[in-house]
Image (cartoon, rainbow, N blue to C red; front, side, top):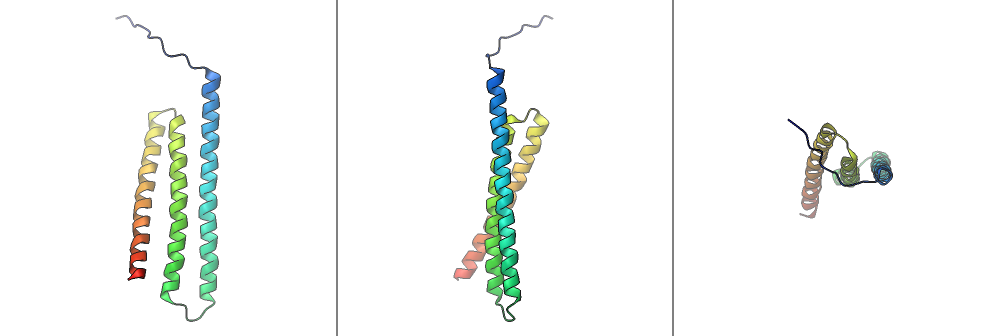
Length: 128
């Protein structure tokens, strides 16, 4: 059986390499933003909890409010991580890498969904 080589569109390797470099840098930058967002939210929640602990008669609602704000920061961090994963999937060379990124994206999306649902339920309960 003879194999026929089909001509592939010409892609300048320098342009492709530059694209991969820019995509990796963008993904890394977005992941750094996600880390900063989660770190900031964690520090804010910790400081607010310390303030709450210093008050002897803190209301349960105050703890819930701290949790809601912290959950919002986590949700935002997950969104940034998902964006970084999407960019990374563009430059992933193997199906295994793409599959792993897909699994991570699905897990983060489910976390995001349930966290957002919990925040909305807490908001509704607070408003009632």
